[in-house]
Length: 195
Image (cartoon, rainbow, N blue to C red):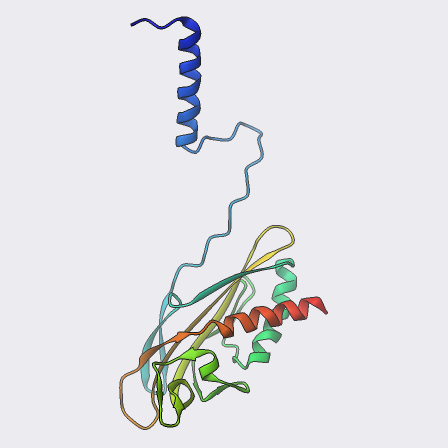
């Protein structure tokens, strides 16, 4: 069946438009390119040797992403103070990648003045209380900043922890983050920026 010329033209235009949508369509020469969203950090695994223990720590278990309404340089300036406030000892400080934190160190009972059980669930409790407050804990906490436009910053904080009873020679087991440490760091950053 032969189509009239007007219908052929309309059909060709619709086909080209749909093909452009399906392929993502290239921007016209000289047209501004829409900004792409910052990509999330790739989960990482790392070997940590502490006191004769060799553990594999991972950032894939907990990643909290928040947007802070300030340029990346200002957020970076106050992030170290936030880490000091919660009691995380700085072991990594890289201004090129805007990464700060500690890949893994031993803590017991408290992080700063806060019981570890407020931040971590290490598999239940014993007669003396939550496991996180009585076990030996290897804790890794890192934050990475990425620009989120001219006046905002994406802050990704990862928490990884493993624990075992202090008095028994058991293998290390994974703890899960309650999300409160990540939230506390973001709140401290925002409070510092509001001053």
